[in-house]
Amino acid sequence: MSSVSLPANRWFVLVAVTLAFLPAVIDMTILHVAVPTLTQSLNASGTEVLWIIDIYPLLMAGLLVPMGTLADRVGNRKILLIGLVIFGVASAWAAFAQSAAMLIAARVLLALGGSMIMPCVLGLIRKTFEDEGERAMALGLWGMVGAAGAAVGPLVGGALLEHFWWGSVFLINVPIMFVVAPACYFLLPRSEQTTPGKWAIGQALLLIAGMISLVYGIKAGFGGKQPVTIVILVVAFGIAALTLFARKQLHSSEPMLDLSLLSHPAIVAGVIMAVVASGALAGVELTLAQELQYVLSKTPLQAGIFMIPIMAAAAVGGPVAGYLSNRFGLRLVATLSLAISAVALVSLAHSDFHDPGILVPFALAVLGLTLGIGLTASSIAIMGSVDASKGGAAGSLEATGYELGTGLGITLFGVVTSAVFSRAIELPAHLAKDLAEQASKTIGDTFIVAGLVAGEQGAALIEAGKVAFSQAHAVLLMTAAGVIAMLAVVVFFTLAGYRNSSRVHH
Image (cartoon, rainbow, N blue to C red; front, side, top):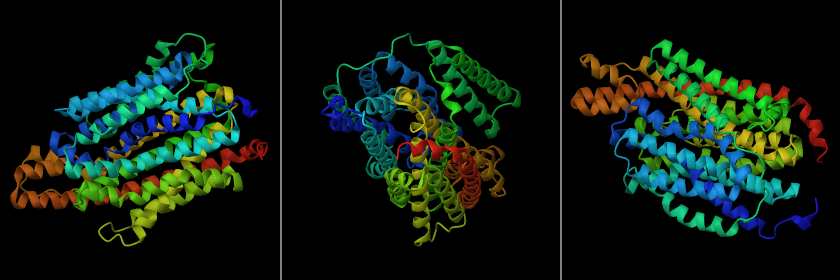
């Protein structure tokens, strides 16, 4: 690659787009520590809480690909700036939401803004850094900032909740946008190459409808809130919409998502790793934040500080993964990182969080580091298997994997937790039937009901909830360990041929 074509201010561009990316990432995790406060303030049910957290990554999963292709048609700069404005407005709306339904609606708008920001950031990095070595470095820095953003989310959330009301976790985005939007406006190049052709809105709607129906069906099915026939119909509709979408992609001259990319085993392995690793990270963080606050009675800030090892180590995982895979090959690094993270999960499942000592922070750090390495390894596998012209399509495929993983991780962890919790909880004998039913749904509901009955019965109820939640937490960590151990085996065999293609770069 000639260095003549490299834009002089490319590192400033990297700073601008990375700053734009930061609030969208922080928003993925900032709510984790806010859940108990928010549940009590809005009197939200367990299902509403799951939707408040979940609607953001799930909608993002459906919107990323359409927004990525729209940015290719219209220009990354334009879509990024619109996304930043929408994100700022939605943040202000979420901060002052008066009910759970209003907050869910604001999160929908946040997802729309976020889905415009994310693919544009990757697209701009790819267009700005032509040199392969520099691009790897830029992607490593971008990944590090992304992981660091997800890491400070709970900390920032905890610190804000210590001094302000729960809405402050959203309001923080507004001043950030006042700085980032002008920076992007002035720093990003005005002219950029765009892809000719029309944007297929029908395909976009099919993808979004299919994704959301499928995930809603899974949530409703596991949650047992809806009749089985409705669940089957919703899931069937989701599968039909996604199948139709896939057929359109394969037969279209201008597909929205280049499914031919999935003929590369390394890309398939990369996407699966992205889904599972991001799902495990999000699910573990969310249940851990609840365990720390509900069971150990920590404040949101104390919970955020307790979780520093997993977050900080995940942020370091990005650059470490790049170095290790150049040194030892991607297959070995990806497989070992997943295997070690499974061991860390088993160790956490058997740990006593009341007396963490040095072992719990160490296990959390190992888990964060290995999952961080796994996520970056998935990126290297995907980006290393396509030529530059397909980079945008591969990027949106990867980002969709992350968002879908986060959404499904939170959903499945939430659903499994409440299923184990409602079986494990031993309710006080004389509790009214309707109250007993509500109290056994989630630990948040247990605390709400305990507030209603007060006295000895309320105290007994809270104690029963704490015991049941700790049991559910342990079951969950063991299940996640099993899934990740299986993934390590899959990745080991899927990446068998990758070594040959990467030899070319050495």
